[in-house]
Length: 83
Ligand SMILES: [Zn+2]
Image 1 (cartoon, rainbow, N blue to C red):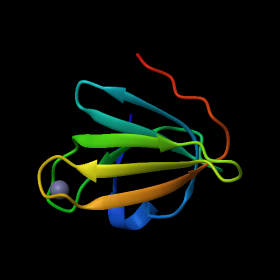
Image 2 (image 1 turned 90 degrees about the vertical axis):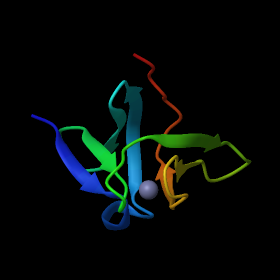
Image 3 (image 1 turned 180 degrees about the vertical axis):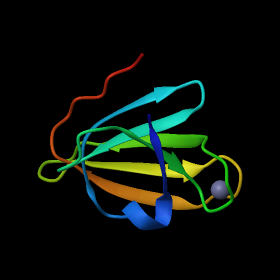
Image 4 (image 1 turned 45 degrees about the horizontal axis):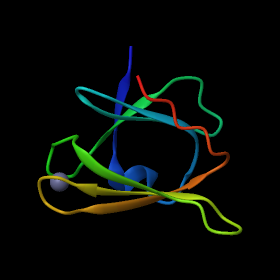
């Protein structure tokens, strides 16, 4: 069963995989063995997602559709999976 995780809790953490589904954005955090659904502090889970692939660090930036709260994560590898 998928757990929900608040964006404030996982801010800046390392994500090894992520994917989107109808009901939200799911992140696999480094060291975890299951995906967690990212939930905003406003209770919504719809995010505008941007992946940055500059030379060097790769990161994932999300912005809440509802209230504009932002979150940034480090991506260990570039492996987005769309389902
Ligand atoms: Zn929000």
